Length: 167
Image (cartoon, rainbow, N blue to C red; front, side, top):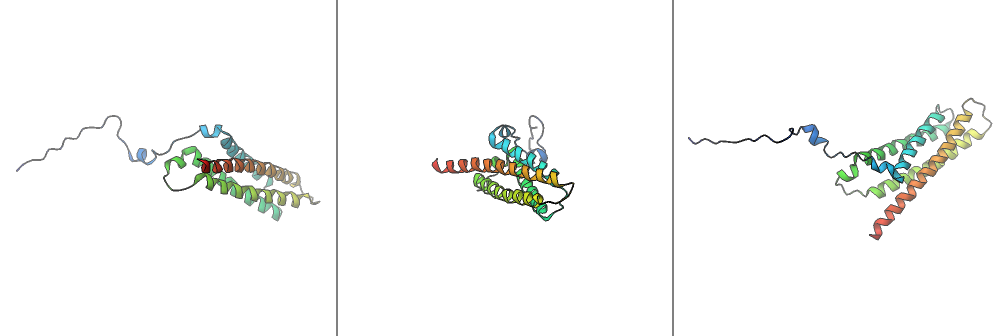
């Protein structure tokens, strides 16, 4: 009976494990955060933490709305930071218009933040005696600053999105 001989040659270097191939698409991209849009994302996250710290606990209903918007936008910003940091945009081959998606997200968050800081400042501007009054007014002011940061990011995204039509 004939024999079949199989020659197996060892691969050079270390053998590829399943975890190496599972995470081989990840490409850490620190350079993005040296650009203006990257710095704005970091500023949005930091200002979101400041707003959270200053507005808690939510004593008034307006502060509950403010904190809801701050947490929602903070989580969305962290997701976008992760998308840019690990290079999800480049790794996925899904038919997603990333710039338009981020533009819509940032535009919505800008509008929500604008409403939320107005509500926060209006409910705490009444003569309400509380030891939390000054920190909540400061939270509203930082909410105003974060609204401006989100609006600047939204403008840059809009400009990038419009530039895709001219190409």
